[in-house]
Length: 154
Image (cartoon, rainbow, N blue to C red):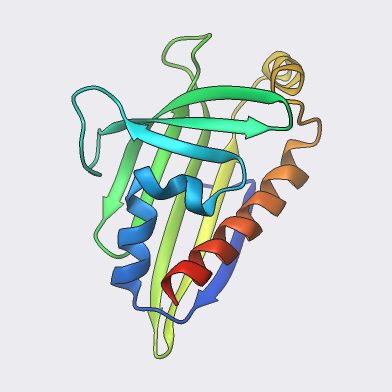
């Protein structure tokens, strides 16, 4: 995936512990400042390729939910998913992912995102979410996510 953004952080914890935390989508609200809660979609209960989950997001007074599908799952190394439009069924408007590389003192976690929205979707999204500069907003959110994740597992 050629990301629009990527943020990395060293975490002084084993890759296995970090991977377990990231892939437990029911804990996403502990890490992300925007996705305050996530749950498995009907028929799914664990992380694996093809599994779907719903993330519930908040920014200021704006609230919205997005269904996502796991596209890559490599134990203790990679966890990637696509965000699916609720307005244009089947359209993937963003990709997110985490890569974990073990180091001698823990691991390096890199969070990625790719924005696939059309210009029309960008305008509509800004009105719905209250986020006008999605790139800066996502970068700050990614930095906060990795900071919170590190605090929880170190």
